[in-house]
Image (tube, rainbow, N blue to C red):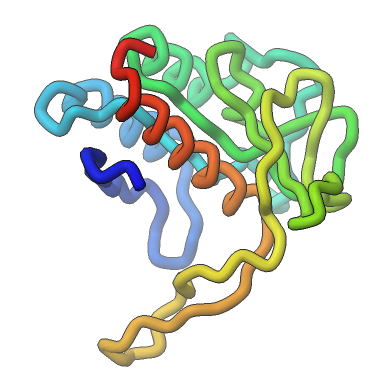
Length: 178
């Protein structure tokens, strides 16, 4: 385990799971501004930019300059923060979502536990890594009204990106100059 790591949670979405570009950018900016105070080295993003109809916005190539969240993510990387982002879950084989399409963002698609690419995970030629994203045992995001946490099995690239973030934390613990 990365015992020297700390987690700083930055909430950018409402309790209903929705938000906008401005909130996400402000969350990334907060991480940049507080990098030294909280020793922030990694930003893990499990959010895909969508249309008004909740359809993932797909990019077939690097999308720098086309999306302000990507630009802010690239800025964070330029300030020494590794940014890792999920590629999305519409099963697209030629495109990925923002901010994963940023040139300085580590994009993460998903696989089954058998190391076969998850057919529901977006991926293309700019996808950097693949990590497990199916049947992940995790905490539930909805509240039951109880003080006892609940757990469930979930899937999607939003669960693959944290695997990579944890691996990067371990790597940085072993060699902080990476």
